[in-house]
Each structure stands twice: as structure tokens, then as C-alpha cells.
Image (cartoon, rainbow, N blue to C red; front, side):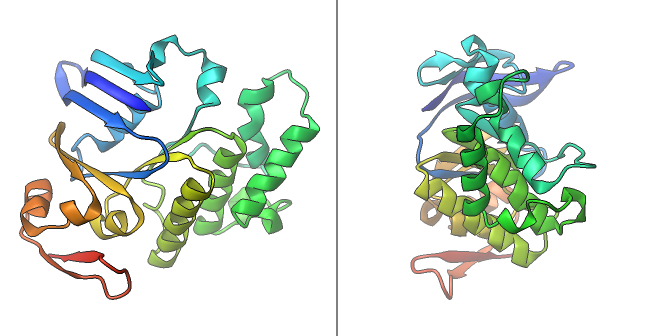
Length: 255
């Protein structure tokens, strides 16, 4: 379990995340929602230990993140930033193999177990057919699935994803989010994902955490969040909510 105890973050005297107390249970897909600049990515980076809290403490399994060794933490947490590193010259299989780094280290030998985990990750994400293709030649949706395969090969207990669908068209957004939800459930991983689209978040997440201007505003199930008054508080505009035509018990927000 992740726990945030009075965690805040500021830069140059500006508070970007005000003190937050929060528990994030494993085994669920958690969506971080809110307007631009609300603190979503900041919170995710604190969970990923990309940022060090200005105050308070982030704990994983009751142990402060600061006390985890890098490789051991990477065996627990797989993080995908919004701005992805360059992949020039990498085949899909090369990229997925990088996910095994926390288990064997830079000078360690790539074992049969490592190769088995890579093949399993590519099979689970439907990317085996891209193994020998250069990553830069793949479509946006295909590339994103290869990056997710790399995270699966890492065999971590948590996936932290920062806007994984931001550069994708609607069809690939649905494909990627459906894959993330399926992997989270099938592999019993905790997933924390930053999303801008409230309807996508409500459809593919089990629990939503809403931030506003660096404050934790509210949290709850999609059914609890998808109410006009809650959405207006989160996004500052009046929205109507209608039943989802294909998701039982689901809803769609319309501005």
C-alpha cells in the first residue's frame, strides 16, 4: 500500500501540492483527475520518487520511499512519464528487455528467466509481432503498448502512468486503457494513472482521486464522482451526466 502522510511539494517558494493525507490500495486502477496544473503529475512523481516531498512522507508497504534502495524500489514500482525517452535504434524487443534491468543490473547476465519475462510481457500486450521492428517505425498506439510491455517485464507491483493516452487518437486511447485495466486485474497490480478525459477515467478506473489547485478535493468510485455538482467543483464548469449506452451503471459527462 502507498501512504502519503501530510505530503506537500513546492518549487521556488510556490506550493504545487498542498499537504495531502492519502492511502492508495493495491489491486485497483486509480485515476488521478483534475484541470491542468491541479497537481496530478506532481502527485504521481512523488509516488514514483521522481520528486522528494517538501514536507511529509510517502510510504510503500509502511517503509518511507527515501529508505528504499533504487533496484529494490524498481522491483516494486514501474513508472512511465508523459515525456518518453528517445528510442532511436531500439527494436521493440530491445525496449522491453530494459524492463529487466532492476532484476539483473547493468553488469548482470541476461538469464533465461529474464527472456521468459520479456516474452510473457510482449504476449500479454500483443506486441510479440513487433519484436524485430524499430520502435520509431510503430504507430502511436503500438509504441505505447511496447512501453507498457516494458513495464510488465519489470514485474513490479505498481504501475504509475502519466497521461499514457495524451498523444493517441480515440481508438488507441480506448485500446490502451482497456489493456491497462485488464493487465492490472489479471496480474493483480496496483495502477495509478493520470488522465484528462473524465469519461475515459470513469469508464476504465475503479477509483478516482480529484485534485484542484494543488489540493486533494475529493475521491470516490466513478459513480460517486460522476455527479454534476462534483464535476463542477473539479473542473469549474457546469456538466450534465447521462447514462452510458454500453457500460452498465456507467455515466458520461457532457459539458
